[in-house]
Image (cartoon, rainbow, N blue to C red; front, side, top):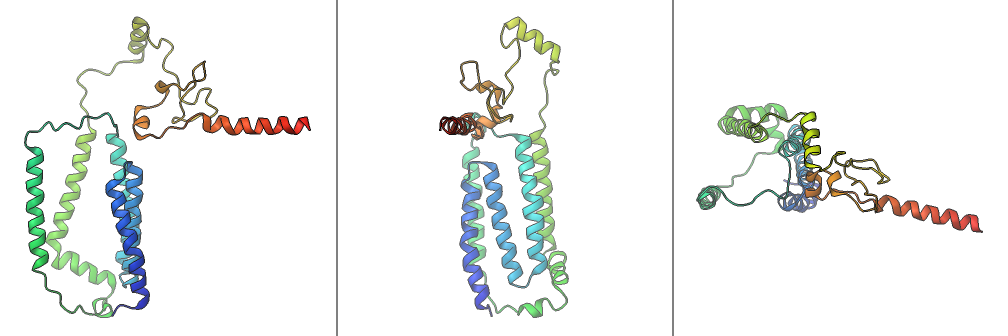
Length: 255
């Protein structure tokens, strides 16, 4: 029987996990999606611990929240995020084939759930009679060994796919620094090089655009990836506080 504390914990953690799952799906930035996934995994681990599955709960927190989330961020950093990428489907019939596969998988899932019969589960003390780790190992490497191996193959395939997507073959040799300088001089464009981020911007950081002689920010000084992610710092955030401090000092000296 579920106690009152476990029921309260579930009804508190359950809606938060649903909100975290929705945030994972609809988040526009990869870091927000990863944080939402971490929230779901931490709350799910807490629910497991409350149900007596201490090992499974700790594994959820350490493995999924730590390793898997870092793996997702690492893959996103390798591939890159750019809002200017084309969203045109270049494979004919790809969308309709995907919808057909989704419909088939949905039908299989609905038929499987409709045929499930719920029996009286044994108490936690009986399932963990030999220890939580032993019981979990019996399920993973015994009854559900085939499903566990399929999951491992899926993760390996995903890792190989990420490596293939991150690998970009270069058709031409990489230009040297001398060739870049000769090209700039020949085209008479950016002869002195592109402006570095943070120059005259009161803040030396790669996400702070440099200021031109007239005081306007230079978009060429920051990475296009940061512009696509809308992760730029405006120089006004640093110049306005300094102006307020200067005005306060002038007012104090006038008194």
